[in-house]
Image 1 (cartoon, rainbow, N blue to C red):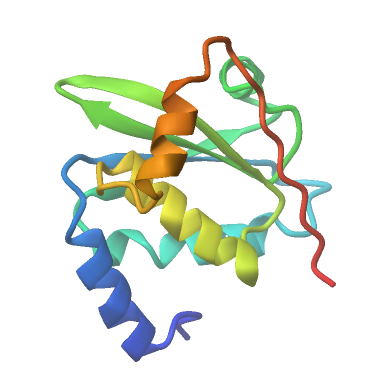
Image 2: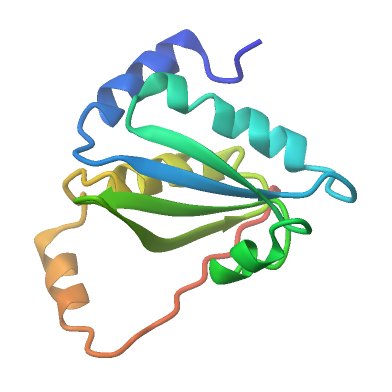
Length: 146
């Protein structure tokens, strides 16, 4: 049974239609000791049928530890978002730790759209402020399911 309603699937198809480049969701998982990995996989599996520009790559945290570390991920479940620019895959540096369900699902969709090349929804003022940042920054957003 689908987690996303058919009406929402249609809206997502339309939104994903605005993407100009392929996106790969690198899903970091592990077989044992991960209570929410299966739920995360179920959520992610609903996205590729909605756009031929979305793919999932599964990385096992234990068996492919070096690859997970290359994305700066040390726990599961996690999702790293990459996109294809010309013929090269680029790391967007957007990460989701834990299951992207509820409100986090909306954030996941927005991140996929952004990595997929959809025009930014930020105001012109916000874009100017971001362009003025002159040093590397790390921004972390924490949410709770309550």
